[in-house]
Image (cartoon, rainbow, N blue to C red; front, side, top):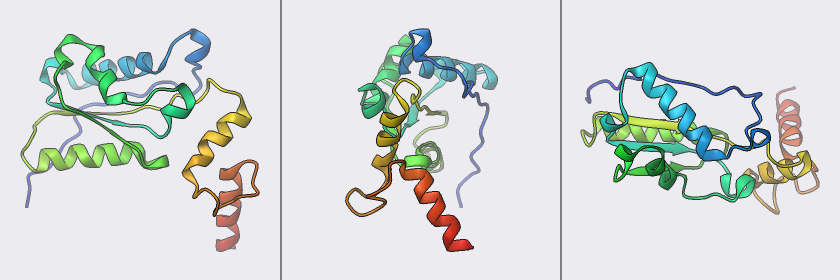
Length: 161
């Protein structure tokens, strides 16, 4: 049995905040939440041995893939730190946490940061709905729905009624 894994700190940005209206991009969100999390854990960037980023579709919402690569730009001490990005629709952050925990349990690293970032308030509502619909099985699920997730949840309620 492996040694326990602990969460040493955490941070969360304001869901109501519209970063795009402030002229900020996803890297600003990543920077703010990473440093707030490090502060809450009383750690410094140099303490991190790896970073995991959970994100659904930054490529669609802001044209930005390779979020792990952005981590190196957030502080000079993060240059060369291994990073991974995890995508699992609404469970992307959970998968990032699971992967970080597995690395610690395996003894590969002792201190790993996990970021969950979603930058979704920078496009019109209909386009956002289309982007979020990418989590459905294209051509098979909710093909006639304008808004995939309300339709999916309606079906779910029907299944349990």
